[in-house]
Amino acid sequence: MTDIPQDHPRYRSLSTRHRIVSGVDNGITSLEGLIAQGRGEAFDYLIGEDTLSSARAAEYTAAAMILLAKRPGISVNGNAAALVPEELVQLSDKTGAPLEVNLFYRTEERVLKIIKHLQVHGAREVLGAEPDATIPGLSSQRNNVCQSGIYSADVVFVPLEDGDRCEALMNMGKQVIAVDLNPLSRTSQKATVTIVDNIIRAVPNIIEMIGELQGKDNDYLQGIVSGFDNQKGLAHALDSIFRHLRDIKGLH
Ligand code: ATP
Ligand code: MG
Figure (cartoon, rainbow, N blue to C red):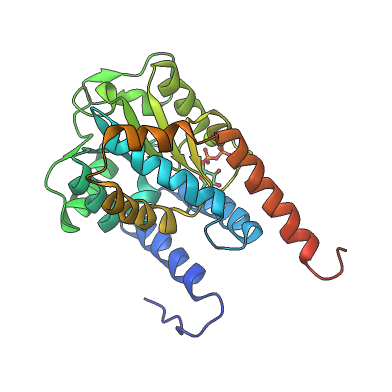
């Protein structure tokens, strides 16, 4: 591993990059995943590499929605597994939502490697090796899902989702929580709740919020969900990008 000095001004970003590259080296992350991370980084730069107030509100809503769900599910791809494996396991443990590996560029080998990787980070059961159901209206490999996981979930947490599948899951009547740094992507526009934040900040935040909200009654949780407006959140993210650009010297 290349040593990145902790006082480097871009330490966090560089160590995240390193984790994704290790993911590729270990056969967990696809090469395309590197490009997706690059697109995410560009938007992260534009929002200021910090959790926006609107993203915090989306994370709080996501925490409430997961707690309210009858059958929550967590979809894991190669980027999410490389970046936040321990946190995804914690989220699953705290909420009872099964982890399910679901890949756009699916190979059996990569699915098994991701399952193993999650197990090394403490997961007991991970679904996805033997899909037995299909998401209707979706031709990509991501239509392969498990009956006991994503297929029958009412609320699906899908960090770093592809727009097509987000739409297909919504068409099945599910509530979809997406994490996507690009407020303009089809995923962001389609999801029930869009968290415009880096997954490395979003998942720990949601875990903390679930800790806060556990024990609150359903009316309280429902109040949080009803008070949330996804379009407003996306507009705030875009405004923050504009404001950030305007604040940069020379662009006044
Ligand atoms: P869509 O299919 O929704 O229109 P897209 O085709 O532009 O999106 P994909 O490659 O399908 O993009 O998905 C990757 C998305 O994940 C990108 O929008 C990118 O901004 C986002 N992303 C990448 N890395 C991260 C990260 N670490 N945290 C949050 N979002 C990320
Ligand atoms: Mg896409």
